[in-house]
Amino acid sequence: MAEALRISAPRETSLIEKLGRLNNEAWEHVGGDPILAAIKAYRDGMGAYNAAPGEDAETVRRTYGIPHQVLEDWTLPAQTREGALEALRLAVEEERDCGASYLTLPLMTAALGYFEKDSKRGLQV
Image (tube, rainbow, N blue to C red; front, side, top):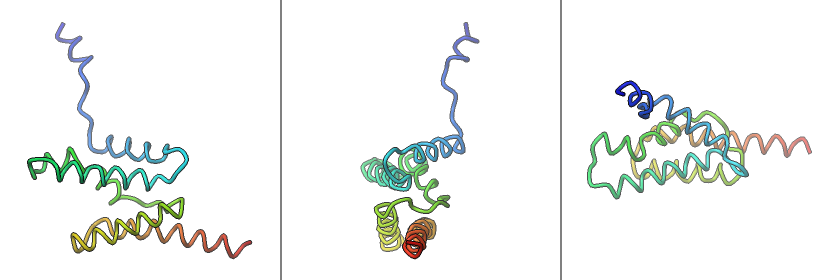
């Protein structure tokens, strides 16, 4: 009986698995830009953190920790103008609120990637 319980109990997911799942969900975001989904997850997580009673590492992990890591590791260009602008908005907020933020460079790089791609497209028309 104990074996059956152990097999059916949900196994703990590693941080890498969670990041992979979030990245896959972002890529599967239909009709939009994956960076918008990632930024929304981060903003939702920050809202949950700000509403939580504790400020410990466990609270960070449960709220905005994983979405923050996804954005910190972001390497893709924004796919839409809206995504590029939202990335720039969040980068500005992070710099204003936190000073040197680990999110600023990846967010600005994603926005720049969109605008450079868009600029090249305009030259080819």
